Amino acid sequence: MHLKGKSAVVTGAGRGIGRAIALLLAQEGASVIVVDPGVGRSGEPTEERPADDVVSEIVAAGGKAQANYDSVSDYLKAGLMIKQCVDAYGKIDILVNVAGNLRERMIWNMSEDDFDSVVSVHLKGHWNLCHHAVKYMRQAGYGRIINFSSDAFKGSVGQCNYSASKAGIIALTRSIAKETYKNGITANAICPSADTRMTLTDTVKENRRRKFEAGLLTKEQYALTLVHRGPEYIAPMVAYLATDEADTVNGQVFHVERGRINTYHFGEEYKFLHKGDDGMFTVDELIETVPASLMSGIVPVAPIVKMADAVSSNAAKKESAN
Ligand SMILES: NC(=O)c1ccc[n+]([C@@H]2O[C@H](COP(=O)([O-])OP(=O)(O)OC[C@H]3O[C@@H](n4cnc5c(N)ncnc54)[C@H](O)[C@@H]3O)[C@@H](O)[C@H]2O)c1
Image (tube, rainbow, N blue to C red; front, side, top):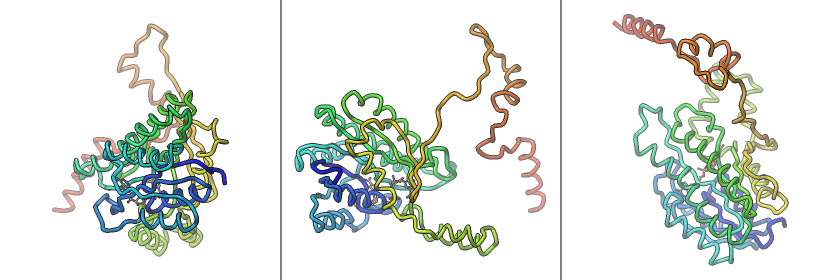
């Protein structure tokens, strides 16, 4: 038992990755507040109460847990989640922010509500819980915060609300890591990859099958998509980051997928142009030099359609439609 005597709040702990984490933290000896209102994939209310099932499972195995059914996006209720942990178990040692929803649309089709909903659960929800928890953790001189980002932080088609939130969660985590390390608190982030209702939808399965049947995936590639990538593979890294032994791991981002964990190398200066300390580039100089210097060898994030090509391709489409 690596977390004996510790107490934890795990959000989004009723299903998927959060559930696997709550179960493992409890198995390792932590008392857990299982936060989950049991909403649908887009955040819509349901009659389900998955937090109760997880609490029952933990208690049946001899552990300690309590449910909380509120939303992480509510500032005051988020404070009460942390307080529930302190009232029930005397302190808050570990905070794991896993709760998440999805509202997928291209930016031109995304409503303001789609944007606000995802940002308020992911980015604001993370901030809410961290803000309240850190107040207690600073006083105690101890804390472990593990946040959930996603590879979508790099930018993702049809998910700009989500990817912006997940990039924000990395910046939030690294900022907390810098602000609180002197108080014995570490903050790290995970970019997971696991089969849950968020990722392995019927549409995703159907698309893979269609690609295979259309010859776009080999038999081996298709077989790889069927390999079990359960959320339980994510939990051990979270439990490790929550231990006393991980006290020097701070401000880091880890990708976890099945039995493979990797770090990222990003945010460091790469190439530069320098015109001297008093120099200032003209726009003409930049047009001339940037492609062969700063941009040399850099692959654009998506193929760029030149304005002239786009205009002529649209004109051709209209002509063939007429
Ligand atoms: N599964 C993956 O491959 C993957 C990839 C990248 C990132 N993530 C991230 O990991 C986290 C967990 O994802 P998952 O795949 O387990 O999803 P999931 O949908 O299986 O579980 C998410 C849980 O969060 C709960 N939840 C939603 N809104 C909430 C709110 N406002 N307050 C409290 N709880 C709320 C839901 O009820 C649900 O039980 C998410 O933050 C997600 O963005 C997952």
